[in-house]
Length: 332
Image 1 (cartoon, rainbow, N blue to C red):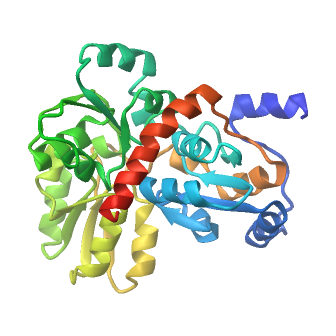
Image 2: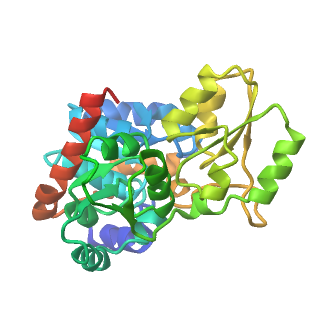
């Protein structure tokens, strides 16, 4: 491999080269997928073009399940770094690509594994449940991994006297503790997107749209969740907008999901919940690092590739597999 290309990826996070402006990238990506036996897995928070070209769109649980069962030789993960790592852990023999390796995660960054290890040592009799939004190294320190779709059910599947550490998201952990009545030891981490929603601005928005249902992701702060008509995972929020007869929804999660909500409900109106800053948006800057152009170049060049050390794969696979097994038993 060209040293200059690798240095460029290390510096910028992605392959950069001129693209013929007359190319239809949708057509070219479809050709490359067939040629390389590649599958594109995209998270709901990706830009609309990427969602529209993806073979599978979903939340963390669905993406993990898809990564575990795919027959493709190459998994192109349009998401953030920890998601691509999870795919590699579940399918170690496959090549896993990420359009931009600098597509990180503020929540994953809030829980450095070496500090979490010391934290864990304070509670030797506790089982460790970690939210999937964390690094491969953190998963390797865990007993069970969970997602926002199955966190409550996974905790409830354990004996009531089981002591539990929950990390890295304190807001999701507090929500799970409230729903299950369990006393969880929480790591103090959070997602920058879900932390910035403004209670005051949402209150004013609800007053302007009195018929709108306010729906929120459990990574939001408790003060926001208390206002919600429905709390759920990204997939849960999408399903709620389809099954609920309301025609207006105020959505407190990353705004990328609104593309799928609008596609599924063309006659309904979706309003992004306003954050507590001068920007009117609630986009994840990491998720939005991926673009259609980067996706095309990623498949074309087979770079950037996401790798995970063999010992971490071995240790991290067990808690992820345990999550998938529990989810399958519960029909999630």
